[in-house]
Length: 309
Image 1 (cartoon, rainbow, N blue to C red):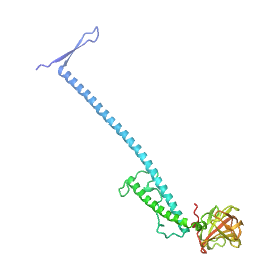
Image 2: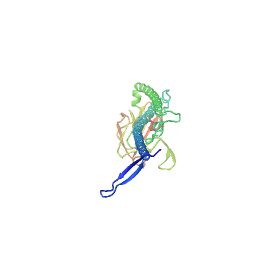
Image 3: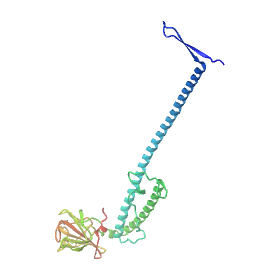
Image 4: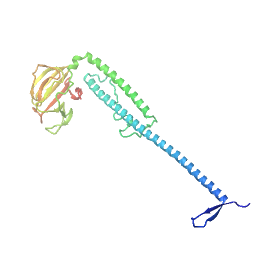
């Protein structure tokens, strides 16, 4: 079969002689098909990669939304965790307050006076800057852990409520005892020596300290910590100028090292009434108040008889 050709005439210019080229028809057709296939491939690839890019872009937006949602969730969980921690701290403070009340009212052995074992620290062990733990060792989710902890706190709060109800009933029936029970600071200052054994500032030997030394400015006001009758208002070698108040029910308080007494023996005083001024008399190394609480003649820690923080 004779091959078919295309003849191409090229005219180089107005004065030049034309040139003639012969091109195989099969070559032209093949070239056109190759070019068409190439352009089709380029177009298809462009469409494919544009779709891929669009998909990647959508995935990136979804990932950004997920990260934003995770950050918001983290902040909410940390805030809730802090609220639970604050609740535990407050309930623990109430438990300490209840213990003092029960010591004062001698009802420590009541069935409702149980250990609450309030938690300390953040719930679930979540740190303020960490949100990497979403499951505990038992495989529980954070929401399940929160729910379990809230149920526990609710149960403990119910126990605390019942306990306070019992104390409330006791207080209603013992108003005279309450007014006669020491429950406030005798003066404002800081405790420089607590109740119990200590090294004597005079001899260096170990001795029992039967009260609190509360350092305060010389001349600061000393107040009665409960209602009672002044049994002693005078001077003692060790206590210096001192006052002793009989509150009844076997409870007595002493206030030593005063610079001046403001009440006399036999006077009836009320809780919060000024009875003396802080001084440095007697066996003392500096201005302070020596405060004692005695129950049936036995010294006890004043800490158990101060309800204020």
